[in-house]
Length: 312
Image (cartoon, rainbow, N blue to C red; front, side, top):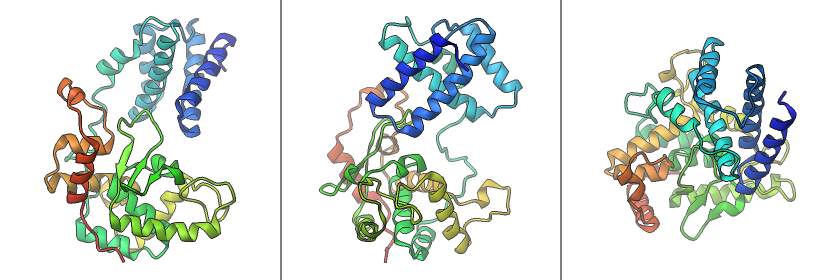
């Protein structure tokens, strides 16, 4: 457990996250990470405001010695970095030293969905077969969104009804530490299935529930596990997913939609910067940072190049 001073700092950070509009899931993850980190600091007679390079390096070494996966280490340092940003903003810390530690020791953890990934990539025809094989309207709708927007499960389950702009066929996602651009677009065949789901949703959703996707059991927001299990069920039925295999290339999961989205837009000729913007990737260079992308130009490029699946 964190000491009293760290506990107060974490409470202040929680309030800041709420003001920023972060999802409850994200906030809970941050808090869990900070409490674990605070316990480590107590053993070293430090607190959250007294960080230095050696302490952070020791923490990386401890996590690795404890067998913590590299992805988890990266996520923990993202949370600690977010806390330090808060500390700098509130003039509690001089600078966020986590940034240089992450750059030096954690930067090579993973390239975003690079072309050498063993993750399963299916053809446009296979994706069409998969989507059309999904008879449940809700499941068809979120499977389409994975393919047509490249969003993550966490982003999908957080979508509320009023996040959808039906005028320009776009969705404004909730802010997360992994995403820069929050606006994603969808096309007319996706809109058709979404509207079909909304008609069904009216019967299922509990009064006052704002979530786009709801559970059939509770009528409340569908969680990540519910999305995953439903998606996998249909993927198994069409032979795209082998639950008995340990090879990642034999698995077809919601994240494969992000891989499909990226690859087929690139093959259709969409500029790299546009794809990065739609994926919400962090910009990685001075040119990227200062190269403003017009939203309407991005939308038109998306509509022109996103693969059509002949949805029924």
